[in-house]
Image (cartoon, rainbow, N blue to C red):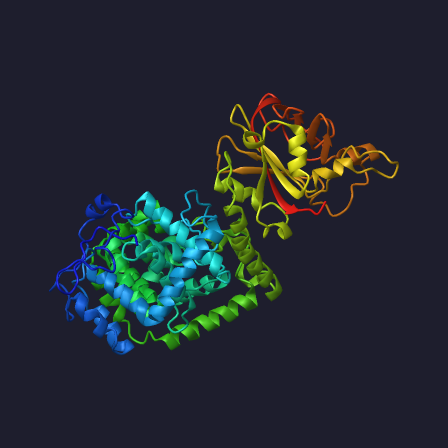
Length: 605
């Protein structure tokens, strides 16, 4: 089990045998961690009662009532970053929620899912994060490259096993924090446990619920922090203040220093989402104090923007972690019932007025899918999004998360996992649950067109990928089997061209290799046939695939998009009418470095 370079001692001063003396040094950058400013709490700086748990005390303390556990964890002001007790405290909270048997089941599920997701229990090249957990707020909290890879692996497995989690960007920073103190298996298991919790609720799992959350945070701040909210609106306007509230969870899990984050997570694990609401109220209250003490801050906000000024304030926050918590606990009347009542009313308003916009064109700068203020310039006349539309959007998000996994098992000599995923997103939905297989490679099977046809025609559809000697990469999704080249038309003649409009071309952008440019069939998105086209022009737009004894081609009409000769060593790429593409390589003519073909459905020929 992996772990951290914090020396762990058990009750008798010996290294804890269960955790190997915290072996997390491989996932935590100790240099970055040591360079953090001292934002920790010190005994005596808080007015409340201070205590520090010993490892041996934790099991008995966690057998008490939930209220007693909350108060105990709130009092742990002396629990510094490098105390091994935090590992045992978090594991104790996890064990209290799940029990040892469920913990073991979660660990087994995680290990078994690695094979399903990546084709190996020790994956190396990982695909991008699924959209459900992807966020521009990717604070790595001093993790090494190995630690960051570990977090990506955990989150991909989590989404694979929890398809109902449609949008939950908070999981990324939480997993990063967890990996400082927990193994991969326990990080996965604890996140799964928190996800299933309803009392308390820990985090929302759809975009609509996130919309409700930020508006709830706004309403609570208007109730408890009205002076600062009114002042900020007068300085930058309500839209900019709303944009600040939309990123509320990242005030804590991205902007604050790491020692503050860890201390807040201590209490969050025992108390749930309401604890984060309290901390947001506390942080904004402190921000208001700074502005009132420094009137020049108003000019700074106007010049640099509210969001930038607030982020810098959080990063340099002048109070300790427990001071934030202590202030948050002093907001009277902030009950679960009040939060639920406020959230319910906001949710009703959202559904009634259609304020949740799923269009990517209206996402804010954070890239997290929240509507911008410009999305609804006139809130009184916002278009209503039907419940059916919201249901379809939710299904699309869940489908997007699930469809990435079959391609994760595929290994290519020159396409990265991210590039493969980009191509995979464009193939027809019905094909995305099929495990693809490498059925032909010039490096493995030789440069023979006969072997190409023999290996590939048994599959439908296929994806052909080509790398040139100039390192250009392009290819095509071929919707029908190459065996159709043998079939005859109504006149008894072999078909010169075959295929369907699902065929498309792709090209890896040399300027940005992470980008995959797609060229679909020119009539793919047209509802009605263009009556102005001549018969010859229509025919030129339907030349999808062609295969003969001395060549293969994809796309036609005034040129071939992809042409390969009988040796599969030389080719040509031109503009064609079928896909309206530019040449896919420089100079049109190219020399092949590698050709790979991936097959999906195995046909019974």
